[in-house]
Amino acid sequence: MSADSSSFRQSTMESHVREPRPSQPQQTGLRRIATNALSILASDATTRIANFVVYALVARFLGAFEFGQLALGLTLFRTFQLLAVAGLKALVTREVARNSENAGRYFVNASIIVLLSSLAAIAALKLFTVGMDYTPDTAHLIVFLSLGLIPYSLSLICDALFQAREQMHYITISNVIVNLTKIAAAFWILSQGYGLNQLIIVFLFCFSLGLVVKWGLLVRQLKGVEHRLDPRFCLEMAKSTVTFLGINGLNAVLTSLNIVLLSRFTSEVEVGLYSAAAQLLIPVALVFESIGVGVYPVMCRSFKKNSKKLQRILERLTEFVFAIVLPASVALYFFSETLLLLFYGDRDFSRAAEVLRIVVWGLIFRSLAKAFGLTLVASLREKATLRILFFDVLTTAIVGPILIGQFGLIGSAVTLLTVRFVDFVQHYVPVAHMFKTLALRRLLWKPVIPAACIALYLFTMQEQNFYLNIAAAATLYVATLFILSAWSAGGVKQLKERYFLLWTS
Image 1 (cartoon, rainbow, N blue to C red):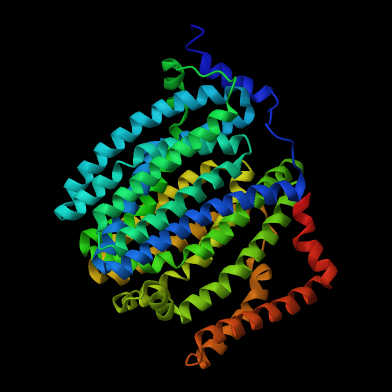
Image 2 (image 1 turned 180 degrees about the vertical axis):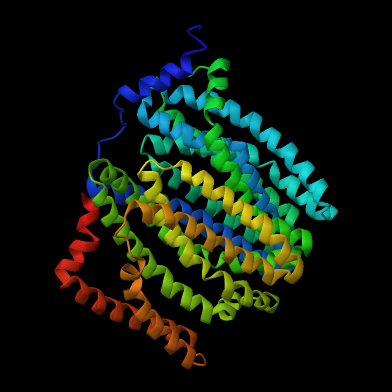
């Protein structure tokens, strides 16, 4: 075997024995977790908030049909973006974290692969729109938006390098610049009476701006590092992404299949109503996902040292996210119509209230599955993730056409809730086999009591002022939960140690 053809394997092998060379002083314990988690939280929050604001602007200025067109276009964009990246983001992050000297090499060669795969994804998406027989306007919008796959996918390679080098704040800086530009430009475009085609130009500009900003930040960090295009290295790297590509591919199908089925059996209006309800779940999901990201490194270290410690961390994490998600789900259930009208300003969107009252309970299953999923990966059982995703997709493919074909919009909501439950069960079973003493009833009873109290309060006081009800319900929940938690832990000091000091080790 020639030296060139073995270069990828050699660099990968060397990465296992060389110590990483971080570009900044090491942080330890809670400070390091908090820094990474807050950077990711800020980055994700700005992106999701910006998208939510754009959705709200479209709803107010254009209406439910155009809202559905944009929702379908962005859903398919995210789906094919996962395919365009071809699993390289995870691979680049892992390998550069192991050996930062290879950062320049991965940057150049991964970018070339992603450029080619993005072009293939655009062509595939064009064929997909033809096969789905969308209206000409909707098909044009989807294909026009897909041009952004090139700059967006290239920027994800930059993100991978920033994450590997523990420079997540650069991702945040770029995303804040891009998203502020997106909101301002979208507001001006729509307020001047322009439509979706002009809004898509704003999206394409912002994707390109994000790439330029990240390239500018990254090139400064890679000065003096080898930058060389190596076709054989590209080929070996592409072969090594098969597992990641499989996970990304299943994720891509899972995230879009429900909306694709809905667009097939109904119309863009129903897609818009479904997406309007789903958008209101994002803030809650963002919170528990960011908590998971922050705790994940501690879970990995704990498994390496002591699996019982990993179980204790899982139990605290499960209690913590459940205590956040349950009251949020109750509030979203009771205030569904009010919130839809508040954010979207169009009574047509009140039809999505029934959808929101169904899908909101999927947040509970999703948050618990997230905690169990992190445990599986931290304990070196990542192959289980691929199996779980496969059965999630299979469930959607079987249940979705039946329910959506028969019940339309409501069928799509029930399909999502069913898949969330199946996903939760698949995550819980292997974790329960790992930790025989894990008992969900023992972990989850405390938030249930105060959540039941606020549900009773909101049911009897629905006619009162919205903001007063929110404040009263939040106060009632926090006070009741704190009293129960302190009592069960044996005191306030023990409660603090149980939920905070445990995560710093």
